[in-house]
Image (cartoon, rainbow, N blue to C red):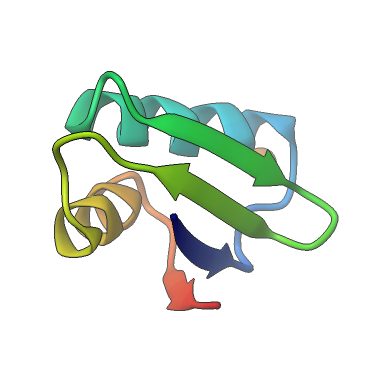
Length: 66
Ligand SMILES: [Cu+2]
């Protein structure tokens, strides 16, 4: 499982934007986001950590190693 901390994800809209971006990069990945801790957990199927971090960045957010 991959974990990022995304501190600039601040509301439900951000959560859905980040989720959509991750699903676009890896449609079958499992994505779990805890807004209170800004924690994004991903069980990838085909994308690697680099690609998923890029997807979060392209959506306008900043993934940090957690
Ligand atoms: Cu938001």
